[in-house]
Amino acid sequence: FTPSTDLNARRDTSFNSADRRSIVRYLLRNGETTTSELEAEEDINPQTARECLNDLENDGLVTSTDQPGPKPTIHKWDV
Image (tube, rainbow, N blue to C red):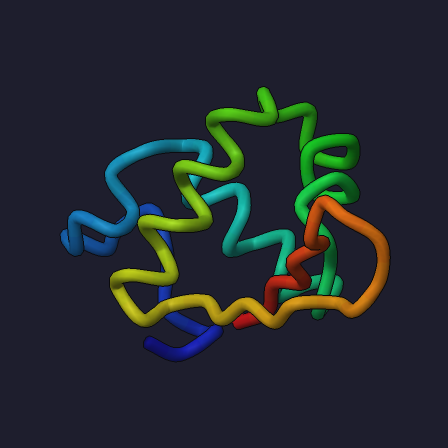
């Protein structure tokens, strides 16, 4: 996967939803972000955002790191 790839034309099942495409575009534009920031900026339902991010991570398209701090754990996401 390269940033120059047209996400709309991609036949990969990773991009079979507008939310997943939106998330990847956001990460490509803005870099590392938290789930909460992504939900607010892209107006995505929290559960949908978490599901999409987990699916994209399982497909190897995004990575997450745990941010140390109070519970619950804050994940930071990046492409």
